[in-house]
Structure formats: structure tokens, C-alpha cells
Amino acid sequence: MLTINQPERKVAVIGGGPAGLMAAEVISRNGLRVDVYDAMPSAGRKFLLAGKGGLNLTHAEPQDAFRSRYGMRRPQLEPLLDAFGPDALRDWARGLGVETFVGTSGRVFPAGMKAAPLLRTWLHRLREAGVRFHMRHRWLGWDDQGALRFATPQGEHRLRADAVVLAMGGGSWPKLGSDGAWAQLLVQRGVEVAALRPANCGFDIGWSEHFRTRFAGHPVKPVVVSFTDAAGLVHRRQGEFVVTATGVEGSLVYALSAALRDGIAARGGAVLHLDLAPGWELPRLIEELSRPRGSRSLSSHLQSRIGIRGVKAGLLREIVPAQDFADPARLAAAIKALPLRLVAPRPLEEAISSAGGVAFEALDEHLMIRKLPGVFCAGEMLDWEAPTGGYLLTACFASGRAAGRGALAWLNQKTREQQAQP
Image (cartoon, rainbow, N blue to C red):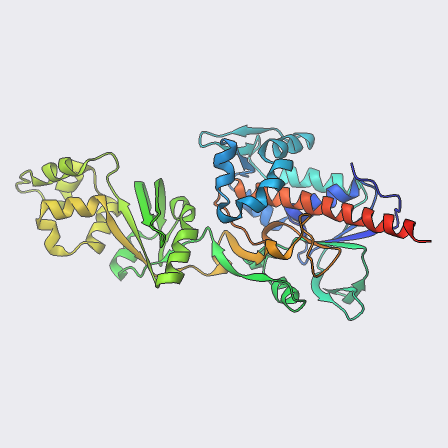
């Protein structure tokens, strides 16, 4: 454990989500004064929303598969996950009196499913450790003397801290505090920040009025989706998604959202292919569709022979040219690879999470901003992204812990330097 023998050292943690709270916990355990500042009236608001339908804390899949979910930023996140990965996170929750279990999909949940009991117990433990919370404090950057500036209901407040941990989230769900306003403040200081973009998001398609009115809100399942990215890599998954008034969203879409978003940015659009009849081989489909249907309608024929009905039948009518319905081979091909043309991701404020943020290249190995000594970053502020399934929260906790330990190491070094001076 890191130890600092100067209790007068003060650390400011800006952001009261999982990353910021974990940093505060690590630092306060070493006897330092920690003050947490957040723009919202209470801490952990997005965390509570994430757990509203069941808190997916982490995932129990094998280590290599788990780490592959972080894509290009896997090398930067692996050391953090080595120090505090899924098993450590479950042990930590157990230390709060919250047992966890693994669901059928491998996702890990608290025994009671909800986020509120865990957060309530955690905040109590932090306060018992001396952590002080300052709510409705919106960070405004630094003044000319290096003091932190906050807008509060009582007016502007300024303070000096010996170390700062920034953990203010990305740019999604701004009503819960993650509005990305910090990005410009850091850019003004010369920090490299990648533009914030929607991640785990829905996409616009531009349905006909008839289809939108009839099928918005309907789940499409089971279905296999596939997408070929600009590098020729084929992404393929099975599950379900939901038709929305403007396009599509849901777990399958979120899983491919990074590739789809980047494809749209590069080529002006992306085509997602749907297999509406998983488990059916194309020759068998053609054979079934070629059978005489007598007096039955084509809709009845599709339902009785293949099980295509409801929203799946609606998708065929929406996308397949009318003349192709009379050709069993063309109709079968459409059922196995229905092209869904996506035109744009939904706005950042609607996304579950965001990509972009403070570049890892702007940080040292302890997550300290090289151009701002003593200032550390954690959580969704960093330039990484991951699918839903517990991966987002795990990396937020892990990076918060790393930033907290980084701040301790830096303060220890400063103390040694001061003590070495004659």
C-alpha cells in the first residue's frame, strides 16, 4: 500500500460516478483528505440509471475474450484490468456486502439486481473514511494561479489541490451530468482530446410512414446480423434488435455500433444484412417458397412455411422490390441477407456511452496528463469504448483505481523530493 506522511495533502476528485468514487476510495484509504465534486445534486446518477433494469456489473467470460471487447485500446486497458478485473470487482462488491451471480449470458449482476443498495453502502463507507462530497459544483477549469474553479448555487468557488482526478464521464446522457463540457477546458490547456462520438447507439434508416407507424417498438428476433467493415472484416452476431421510429437500436445494433458508426463516417452510409431465418439453409428456403400456396396469401404462405410474420414480414415488404416476391430464389436470398441501409448514428446525447476523450498518448502510465502534472484522468473521459455487457463499468472502476493509485504515487514522489531538499 502506498503511504504518504503528510496528511495535509488535499486531493480533489471531480466527478461522482464509479471511476471518481473508486479513485476517492483508493486515495482516502491512505489517509489523505479527499473532496469529491460533482455538478449534479447527488452522486452516481448515471450508475443508478444503468442499474435500473438490473445492474450489469461485469462479465464472466474468459479473460482473452473479455479483453478483446476493448478493441484498439486493449493494450492501454490491459494493465488496468490486470490490477482490477472482473474477479477483483466481484470481490470488491462482496466487501460491501453485495453478493453477485453470473447470468445465463455470462453477465454478472448483484444478487438483488439493483444499483441503489450498492451505491448507498459505498457512499456511506466513503463518508466514514472521511471523503467529503460537494454537490452542484460544476467544474469551470483553472484560474490564472492554477486554482480549480467551480460554479455553485452560491457563486463561483475556487480551491487549490495537491492532486486532481478528473472523472466526469463522456458525452452521453447529459441530463445525468455527462455532458462532455470538460473537453474544451482541456483542449485549451493543450491536452490531446479525441472528439466525442456516440457509442452503443441506435441508427437512423428513414422508414416509410406505414412501416414506422405499424412496427416502431417491435423487437426483431431471432435474427443474425452481419456487417463488412472498410477493412473487409465481417462482423456477425445473433440475437435481437428493436425497430424505432427513426431506425433501429438494441443489443445487436449496440454490439456493432462502433464498426457501423465508423463505416458511415468513412463512406456516408453502412449496410447491415439481416438473416431473418437463422437455421434455414438457402436451398431449403427456396424449396419451401416454391411450393404451391393455392388460395392462401403470400403472407400466410411465409408464416406457415417459414415462420416469417409480423415485423419480419414488414421488413421484407419495406425493403424487397415487389417483383421479387414472385421469384422464390430472390425472395429466399432476401430473407437470408436483407440489406438494411443505415444513414446516421443517433445523437450523442441518446447514446448509452461515448467514444473519444482524452488520448492515452497524452497520459503517462499512471493516467496523469503529461502537460498537467498532478492531474489524472479516469473513466469514460478516456479515449476508449466497449460494448454493453459489463465491460464499460469494469473499465471505469479499473481506471478509477489506477488514477487514484497514480495520484498517490505522484504525491509520494513530491513528498520525497521536498524532504530531500536542504
